[in-house]
Image 1 (cartoon, helix red, strand yellow):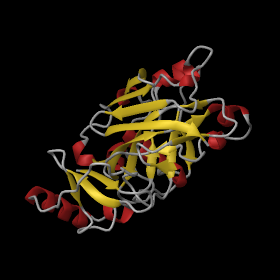
Image 2 (tube, helix red, strand yellow):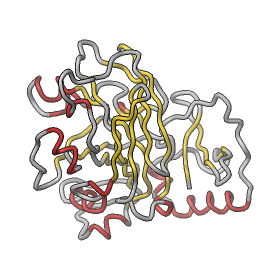
Image 3 (spheres, one colour):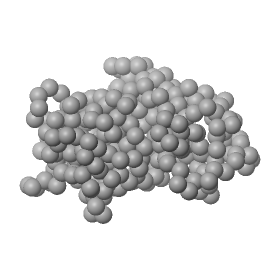
Image 4 (cartoon, one colour):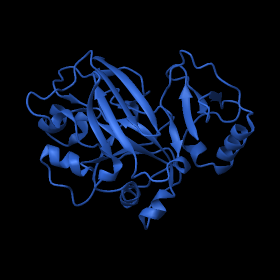
Length: 285
């Protein structure tokens, strides 16, 4: 299933995109798309049954804003330097274990919402990423295969980053990762049954119409199942938590000087095969 949330910010309603591309209203069945729903197999089953029977009312989607496909996100765990080609382009050694950092849940916006270039920023960068959404409580998982069984679904994430704040201003990466609007998510949460192999997904990103990133999750140093297993050794993952799994080569940081960092007025578009497409106009904060 392709689950999403539509409407004005803070007042989104749950919806489903059916196989014919028609937007269907889920508000008569479930209150929202969130962790409790993803952990409730019976509720998900009712959605599937209603969708298969054609019982869900259609929504007029003209002009409807698409919000983040997941409400009340618990935490966003991020994996750094998780693609072989991205490590090479930045001159970094591939890590021996996954690099973990966090983004606050309030960085999440809709897939087509405005992204704000922070005040004083000169190195705002792009990163298309596969987001993993947890559907079952995960702690001390024993294998990558077991870990994949705790995944509810997948989505497109844009891990916007300010490199000066991240790298040059002291401390850890958090200052360059948690500026407002720095995690567009969606358009859909695609349930795991529609993604048979998360290591066979194409990722692409364009800036002002120019292709910048063109990669595949096959390049991940630590595959999705291993990432979820590894993270569960250090923290409990709950339904509705999100893991951003890293970005392939092609970010501004890895380009020759002068590096083409983002400015107000730039337009970024990104997509992952089968998971949908985003488009953001960047403006000054």
